[in-house]
Length: 184
Image (cartoon, rainbow, N blue to C red):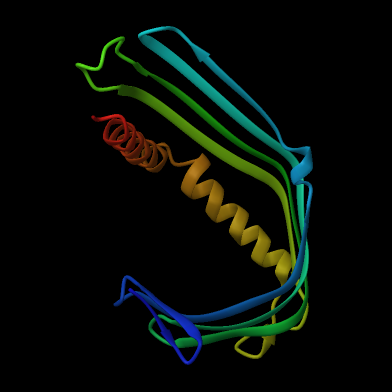
């Protein structure tokens, strides 16, 4: 559930496990590196088709100032807050999409997406938010980045059942959107 309270966005996820109140504001953000984006798209076949799409971004950087006020509520409350310069970057960002399906040559049958593999990743995440604290103690962003990278790799790269579940959900969503969009 989302709601605005005193100009702060409150989001409740799993209300009995995690509840947080968050306010983050960025000023005059400068994002660089997107001009180096490369992508390749390949579609093979008529009727039975194979599609492949790969997006690569060598490096993305963000330079801005921020103001953050984040209240985490688990079994106890924790405050993350700060303001000042924010610098972030990530390298070797990639996204791949490979699918097989059937596009009927007439409109009597639906388009079908039989298999789908979506993958994404990155390396060398760097994050620095000056003057940020966790329960009034300075945040070690190098340690936080290590935790973020570990969580990502454990949840996505090293977790085939989870990745399979996400791919299945995305496949069903795309299948639904395509077939609803092309119905007469």
